Image (cartoon, rainbow, N blue to C red; front, side):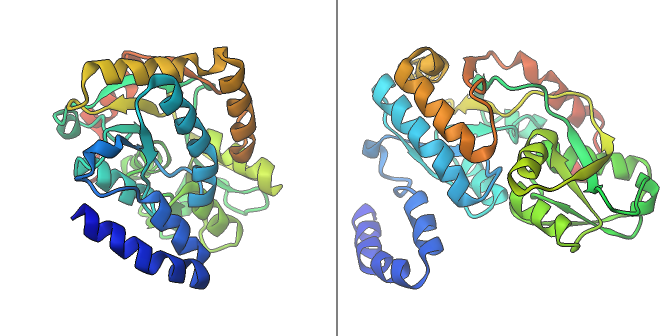
Length: 294
């Protein structure tokens, strides 16, 4: 199977690159087939921006972590955040940067938190353009609200639960990632957007946009670095240490400073170790969440 996969890539990727560079990039990010265990481990971060920006941020980081830990990692992302999470649920990857695995059912899969990115607390929010006539959540009834995707915890599940609990019958639509959702919002295709506050602020700075917040959740921690239960402990610990030590090494710090510029993070956005206890609010959400969001 691995040989077939390799031959197909050799035959078709050059043609794809000529006809559609975007598709060629996606093929490159899909990584090796699931059976290629000798090629190392697959790392899947949730799509928070476009595929190109996601690759620009993560590829230098995982190259550094691979070199420092001696554990080879390769990037594997799908077209949308839901596609990437589907890889995770199908057990096609071994390390993730995600907050999609804290529901009671998914916790049974055995993923464990090994670290997180040190950033200020984030909030799930419902926002509108600064010049929108909408000033109250009730005005969103029967209107389209754009979200990154159905798997997005902070950007979709938390804010949409608020609308359901208030019996506001808005229509959710999905854009694939936060950049896509905000592009639809500011083009007038949707009345409001569900967002992660950090990502919305970064986008607004990059694109010179202004918005108003209609509703904001309690503070939450950013996504978690997690390892699958099938990964040997020595490899888990080596990867965790490499992530957590990155900002203390001049080479690692230089990489963090450079890649953070791509997505609007500051150089203080480095990685630290975690035992997962900071994610208790995620688990509490599922105890009372509307059934369709569990």
